[in-house]
Image 1: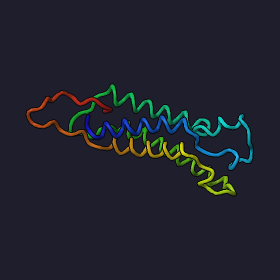
Image 2: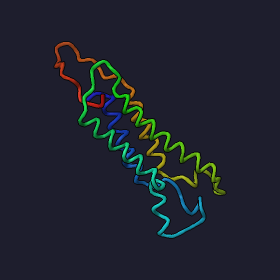
Image 3: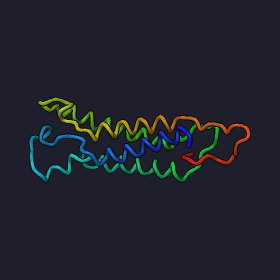
Image 4: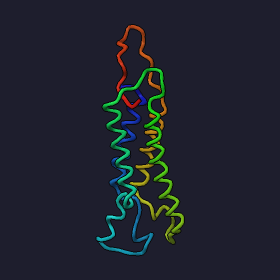
Length: 146
C-alpha cells in the first residue's frame, strides 16, 4: 500500500475515533454538571456526527475506490479532510467566544485534538501523489480515492 493511502487511512481512523471522544468540558464552559450534559461533551453535539461521517467516507473511499498512478491521490478526499478541519476550527472559535474563566485548554478535551490531527493527516495523504509503478511491476490501477 502506498504512503498517501496509508495517511488517509490513518487520518480517517483518527477522525472516527476522535469524534467519539470528549471534545470539551461542559462544567468549565457552561457551569453545569450532571449526566444529562455529558452527551454534549462527546464530539460536541452534532460536530462529532459530521466528523465521524467524513472519517467513514474517507475510510471506505480508501478501501474501495481506485486512484491513477502519477496523479494527485484524492481531491474529493482533500475537500472532505478540509471540511473536518473547518468543523474543528469552528469549535475552537466558539470556545474562544465563550471565553471560559478556567482557560481555553481547560475547556477542551482530547477528542477535539485527535479529530484535528486525523483531519490534517488525511489532508496530507489526500494531497500526496500516487507513485508510478516501477518498470517490471504490474501496471494495474492502484486502489484508493480518485
